[in-house]
Length: 406
Image (tube, rainbow, N blue to C red; front, side, top):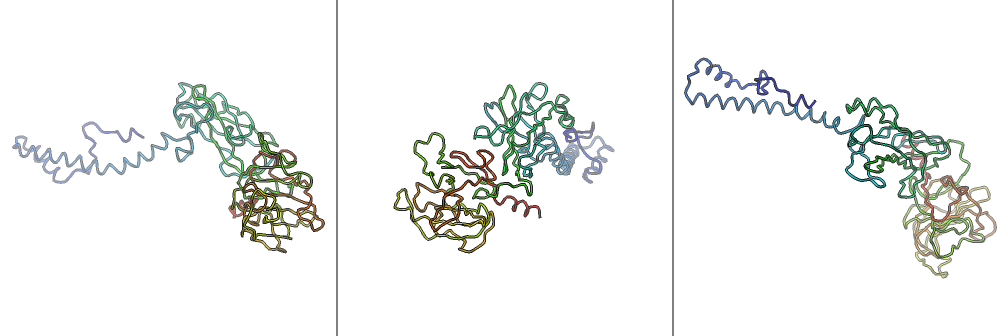
């Protein structure tokens, strides 16, 4: 393709047939008929030749631009891609040197919906463009989340997979084995938005990474846990205090979720974050007119809250809600994923968060004693959140996926 841009026929100086200026052709014929013209005639010929060349360059510009636009993606991008960001990998642990690691994750595609808990096969290709021979890649690891941000190792990749299309596209026979595959066994992929990060290692440049975002959904009818995290689809928040008063590692203070509140959970939602119904039911009590709060027992009764009866003898409580944010009323039916209010810092609190628990209905004293409420997105600890862990919510994801597909 670049050869097309530079191709010139001998003796033509790049002049294309039928493009010469009419007066220049006529003057050129006159000059051939009489070779002893004056210096003025010679100057005229030189001037016409210049006008011919300019005219041809102008007419050639659109074609040249089109060829360049066609060539640049093929020269710098990977197979079947449309932008440089699609193929250039980002630095990972111990990465060094220029960004010369390129490749693509073919499957799964970004935004794909997968079966939570099912087996997963991730495949694509990757090469080190600076390697003197071969692909230059000697190892690959797949993580659920970034490794430097607490991501979980899923599986090691298999390199050397056949990719003749890559070799043909780049004109590199030694890249015919640029393919990789990663087989993740069943039970490893928890429900929720997942950020799958593949790390490829080159001996000269360390680890480089490429990510693909997918949504792991439970199979219809297979949901054994009716509760979901009480915040929106795709959002991830840390547990400030989990079941049995568990706190983040390194915390020196003692937890307060004891006795009847041992199964309560404090989620680190910033003030103003929408609070969603963890499970559907009917609102049986709500308060949203308090504007005060602080780390003082005097504020114990000043928290805003919503309590939803699930119709099976249990109810969920959502506490410390923002002043004036409660959008449901007593007696109103609500569905799972419906916005109830916004998180805040009212009542006896040290800062903004959401206090969530499921209790056994009985009597008039609220809150009732808490009971275990395994959350769908929590793949460890029997579904019960522990302090210091962070969880990505799927609450409302299924509805969002349905709307996107319609």
